[in-house]
Length: 224
Image 1 (cartoon, one colour):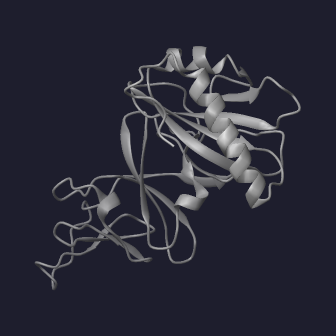
Image 2: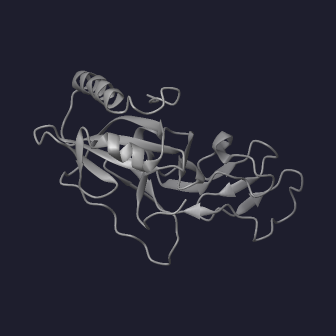
């Protein structure tokens, strides 16, 4: 799956709790997303270079990520293998590295892009200082079908960022093309919310999106 060379959101900031490794996907690439011991965000290919086991089920040790299968450890900054338990006295070869993607944190979301070119795309700018993420939803549908349904409640700022039709409702919808079959939608509220308000607005948005996407196969539906 190919599309624009740009930054896409891949998960919400609050998913990266200490010691956790989140699983995500962008343009067919499975991702392991995590935060190290100094708070830096990392976006790696979700695959150990040894046996291909998903790193998202591995151990976040802060200064390294450890594969669950054979215990190989990979350094945070480089993705370089730094320890092989079966050969503790051996220095791992330099080509034993995890494929890394650039990561950024903005608007309450973690972003990345697929390096299809040498250049780094410009980060999208929204008309708000910060944002509060509501619930994210995953749809099993093609991108064109998702855009047609989204048009019932929002209008495009560009192909991947939409704004609520009602200008008094400060909600943006940011699209994450996961692969040919799945698209995630991240709802972003542009303003302050108390916890009580967040719950109320999140429930309302969940109902609106469910209604807007009712034409999409019920078996796929919306995952809260």
